Amino acid sequence: MTYVMGRTAAEYARLRAQAKIWEGATAGLLDTVGLAPGARCLDVGCGPGETMRLMAERVGPAGRVVGVDVDGELGRTAVTALADAGHGQCEFVEGDVERADPVPDGGFDLVFGRLILLHVADPVAVLRRMWGWTAPGGVLVVQDYDMEAVAANPPLPVIDEWRRVFLGTFAAAGRDHRLGLRLPALFAAATGARPDGTAVAGRLDRMETSAPMLAATYRSITPAGISLGTVTPEEADRFQADIARAAVDQPDHQALWPLLIGAHRRR
Ligand SMILES: C[S@@+](CC[C@H](N)C(=O)[O-])C[C@H]1O[C@@H](n2cnc3c(N)ncnc32)[C@H](O)[C@@H]1O
Image (cartoon, rainbow, N blue to C red):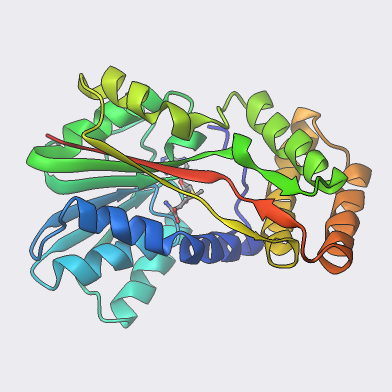
């Protein structure tokens, strides 16, 4: 398995910051599909557990929220923090969703995955598994990026460099940086029909506030980029200096973030 973002404390902090940014888009989608008290939820590739919290708030103490992630340390830390915050209905199962079925078929009223299909070798196979875990009458919900959108206005060379290395490393690892755009087609292939609905969330922000996330994503992908030959350590150092300078010198340039594309289908 190639997970290009790495597993460092800095990457875990970045995932938590990223989850805050997309919290409204994810909460809106959970409310669109009508997540009710008592429902059984599965978060596939749950990471730091921020979506599990949104689920727990909606299903209440009678509900059940299970997170699955290949990163056991991250998932166990997430569930401990959720329990400390009063969400005792949350559980964690360590497992690789590309290789095994860590949960029983048909067991969940909501099966959800955010920014997971982008990271697997065979997204249709994983989506087919997720459909299998969805109970009759339950709903499958996915959110994933289309990273082609990333741009600056006025244009900035440091954003071109981010695109060269970040998107290039994804491609070199055999991953599709436009996966979000393909969600309707992936649903059709994995579940037999296109989604019931889609939702697109975006973010246009000043360079001053966008630069730290761009710097963090680039930093997390750099070790994979070095081993795949898309960036050198010297280029990576230069990028970090350039993006820090851009935040100060061009604070009001606009940065367009990846689009977060959602799709849902009831079983
Ligand atoms: C970009 S993070 C997204 C985390 C979370 N869904 C969110 O949006 O905040 C991707 C997560 O998927 C997990 N992951 C990647 N490949 C996986 C696999 N094959 N099986 C289970 N989890 C996987 C990673 O460990 C990581 O926690």
